[in-house]
Structures are given as structure tokens and as C-alpha cells.
Length: 399
View 1 (cartoon, one colour):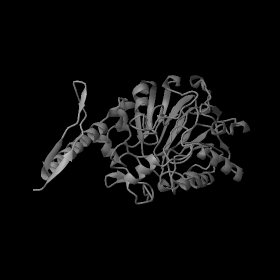
View 2 (view 1 turned 90 degrees about the horizontal axis):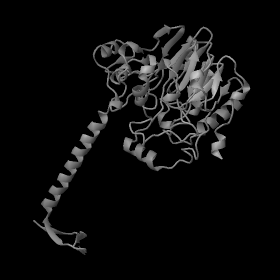
View 3 (view 1 turned 90 degrees about the vertical axis):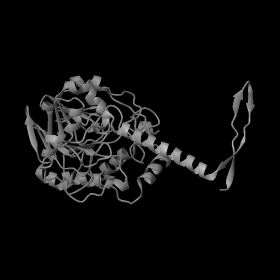
View 4 (view 1 turned 45 degrees about the vertical axis):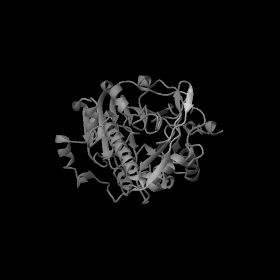
């Protein structure tokens, strides 16, 4: 066996002097053995680390037992998973996940994150008047309807398992659970990290009367300590009415999952109604045939809260591109629109303000839709709308 020479320059501190060592001859098979040992140790370490991470409580639990038995009866569930109403590729290209991750991590996009704290209106959420709503950034809305407080997709922390990976933008004021009133209904659209905030449920579950969620999501909530008798899980087209508030679970074109298993819990949009208001919350969704179905089922929507942001051409079937947002708006025919899924996290490769600028172009070119752009924290009254709600608040940060 031929030998190779390895020269190591090891700076050793010995009695105040550096000593340079040494020339070693090592058989090739020993070198290869050492390399294999190092690789094995790395694989074991990565496996243990992944196991530890995936078993963190914030990842939740997959449905099981009676909950899984109910899921298996759903017409939207077969072959061990939930399905959209139509074929919905998760991604539109065959590029590997490593290629996409590398591009996301290394390719710079101008203004993906605001250059200074975002302006925020500080409102008294506990004193919110009836028939009003406050957007709290991304997809989180607090509304008061029929004298009930309803909180949609509450996220007050990170949009990932680790706060350092996807942290919120800097803001002049950051709303937290301490600002909230006791909540009558928390409404959850799906279990992705930017819509289901583990820390919120750990901190505030005792202040919530009912949790309304799509099928399967209740397993996470119960695992996190929410009382099972306060969890109401719905399939598409299921409806509940409590204290004069009617909540209908409706389809969306998306997917679900917090770890390695996707499509095990349902995703949804919602119609929330009182005697005098009909509000649509789209959640996350690509455009699809469910939109005209919802428009036909609910021909008089007062407000539609739409997804607008964190889009990418590769995700166009599960997240609305700007052209699809306009198509959805024209199809739904609501009286007024407010858009979210922007202005709090950077989850896609576009400037943080791009979704809002798209709204200006859309509103200027469409006289038939009324799009409001309230600041984060600004109270919007749902029964008395005025023209001052549409402002360009984000442009002060673009300068």
C-alpha cells in the first residue's frame, strides 16, 4: 500500500512558545477510514438534531384516534391526506429544495425588509367598538361583531420554529397578547407557522372561549393545552352559529403541515356573519374554482379580507399572484376589500411594499372595487366607511 504524506502545522502553546509539528506518514486506508468515521458521526449528529427539532412542542401533533376517524369520513380526505377541489401542484418547477433554499438565502432582493420601523397606529383593542376591525399585520385580524371579539389567525411572535429565522419587521409599536381583550372566537385558517403561533396558544389559551379550526388542527391545540370542549373543528361547508355569529368553513386552494408531513390537516377560508354583516376571510389560497363557488353561495359580501403578498411564480397554485388577486376580487364582487399577508414577515423574494403598490395600480384601474389600506392597528368601522381609509402609509418608509 502506498503511503501519503500529511503535513500538519499545529500551533501548540508550550511554555510560551509555538512549536510546529510534524510530518506524518499515514496509509491511505487509514485516511479513508477516518473520513468515513467523521461522516458517520456527522450523519448521526444531524439525525439526532433533526429528531430533537421535529419533536419540539411547537411542531404540534398529527391527528389520531377519534379525530382521525372523523377526518377519514371527510369527502375531502382520501389516500391518507386532504385534497384541494382541483389538481394543485405545490410547486410549478422541478428544481430541488436545496436549489430553492440556496436561491432564497443568497440572492439579494432590494427592500425585502423595511429600512426603518413601520408606522403603527396604537389603538385600544380592549375598547374596540362593535362592527369594527383592526388589522394587526400579516393575516391577523381582530374584529368585534355582534358584541363578540373574534381573532383571526393570531400570530404575535415568529413565523418559523426559530424566531431568528423569520422574525417580524421592526415596528413603531408591536402589538402583543397584553393588548388583547378576552376573545370569544379564535378562527384559524390552517396550521402553517405564519398562521398558527404556538406561543400565542401557550400564553393566551385561557382567555379564549372557543377555537374554530379546520379538521385536524385541533390536535395541535389540544396538545398545547387548549381544552377539548372549547375546540370546534369544521370541514368545508360546515357551519356553526353561536351567540348570533354564524361561521361557515369554506374551501381554499392551499396545503398544510408544520413538519415533514403535509396535507394531514385541512386548510380553509371562512365566511363570518351577523344579522347585518357578511365578512369573508380568504386565508392562504391560490385562485381556483372555489372562488366562483363562494361568490355564488354568498352573493352579498360586505368585506373580503384577501391574501396579498409572499407570492412567487413557483407557488402560484397555492398563493395568489397579483393578477390572481385581481381576478379573485372581480369574481367575489364584495363591496369592500382589505388585504393582508404582508407588512410583517418576509417569506418571498419581493420588496416588502410591492403588494401594497400593486393595490394602488389595481384600484386606479378598477372603478368597481373599493380597496382599503389601513395602517397596522388602525380601526376600520365596518358599517360606516369613509374615503379616508385608503392611504399610502407605506411610502413614508420607502423614502
